[in-house]
Image (tube, rainbow, N blue to C red; front, side, top):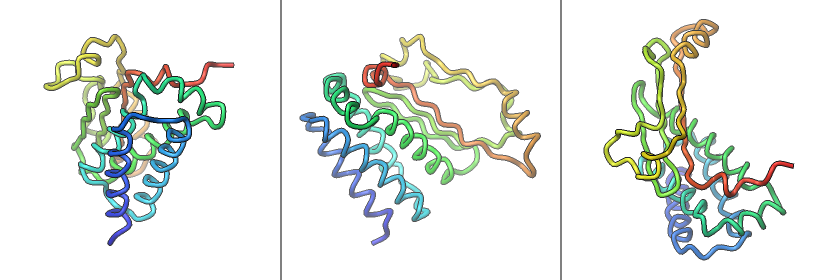
Length: 189
């Protein structure tokens, strides 16, 4: 069995556990650590996560970010900055998924608590600003469609960056809109 296949099973098992919705602060911390290990293993094994792996990964995160876990996240933050760690793990996972994609391909994931987009774009192909989320997208979750939050990435950003690189640079663009993450982050000190 390949390491990546084992990680696919780990994400399936963690998804089952997080869907039970009966967490303690330690469960949140352990789940974030498991996601970190899964991501690191995918990276070391040069394993390309399947579409099921990607969907399961983001569904686990959505489950962890349920509003009912707010107090548990507050308790967890007293021990370790788990919400910040989770965001770093998500960023690394998006990079791994993007590296495995073909140029011009994208993945759009929608769950109860987040909407994510992962794109692999050759710099020369970016002709217009990139907007996220795509509010008119078929199947868009209601809270994201009605959200005032959005990200606009100017096309000029890709041109100026690619001028500094040799060859034909490719960008991996990951954007995530969270419904509840702000509730889970620690208060600024």
